[in-house]
Amino acid sequence: MTDPVIAKDEMSAKKTDAATVPEDASERRIVVQIHTLPKYRVPVYRELNRRPGWSLKVVYTDPAIGPSNVPADGFEGEPEPRRGLQIGRRWVRWHSACWREAAKGRADVLILSWDVQNLSLLPGLLRARWNNIPTVLWGHGYSKHEAGWRQAIRRWFGRRGDTLLFYNHATRQDHIDAGFDPDRLFVAINSLDQAPVREAAQYWRDRPDELAAFAKQHDLAGKKVLLYVSRIDPANRLDWLIQAAGRLRQQGHDVVVVVIGDVDGEAPEGKAIAKQAEANAGLEGHVRWVGKLYGETQLAPWFLCSHAFVYPANIGLSLLHAFGYGLPVVTSNDIASHNPEIEALQDGVNGRLYQDADPDDLARVLAEILEDEPARARMSEAALRTVTEDFTLHRMVDGMEAALRKAIARHNPKR
Image (cartoon, rainbow, N blue to C red; front, side, top):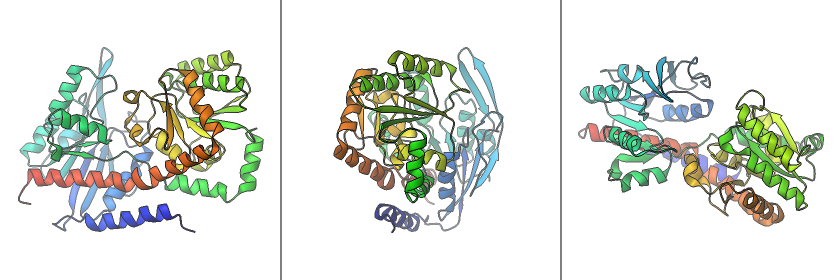
């Protein structure tokens, strides 16, 4: 039987496609200049390219500089080397695609990465204006470690694009409050393609005996499983989760922490901190250090055997990944320290927030989730709705299209 929520989203996507055909039916060529082409972005570009009226090329840095790059699929992609120079603790870069793609005849509209450390950004903007090419600046629009001078430079650049494209609504509102014209500001709400998650989850749900055997094999059956999937980065404070789990076990909860990430190859400092926390909490044997897993079918049983997804600090797209499996997400209430995707979390609705830097409060929040199964089930349903109705790939591309159309209209009001 078709999931009614998913069916509703697909119907909405078809309506969106029909409603976004430009008045001029001829294709307009979009060029996106970006620093990396990660796997999770490919479905976004593919969806934009397939919509009527557009033809897309993405120019990204060559794999030697962007090791996470993947091949383009469903759109034109072109690797373009960039140069970097370290000045003190900071890097400045030159990506010649900014200048080259702003030449006459190469693009009808140009999306540029809103990176003020990219020295080629201003020349690209000026050349595009000279050649009458509309521009969209796309980026976070803020820094987690914001300084007044850096914010001023970023906003100075922002006033020179035809439109600005953000990842969430909160940053758009910040710019409206700073005096930017709301008609120039758009949101491509950061989203993931949930189709692989749905398929992997369904694969295991169709095989309940195999899923039960998996849980037994990894000693998860009958236990309360807290899942963490990400880099073992010190900024993510995995040690706070381990400390909180230790307190839960002292309170009588049969808790297991599952850690999926490159334990041995990356962020050795983060691993050392987490391992020390494990020893201090007396959790040896209750933390599963799984290591790297990338295939969704490999990841799915861990998600499906878990009770909550816990990312103590600095959460990003992992939040939407967990929501795709219907897992409530728990993270810190220091909203400014997170990535734009934190906008998807509603405290008490599809996840919980705990007092930042307080493992005792994290333990309290987790205990409430583990002890109140009806509330956890409601959060699970809400988590799934969040990524099937609101934070969807189609809505993200809708935002991109809106910014593109407005840039063209502002730059060429008679077209």
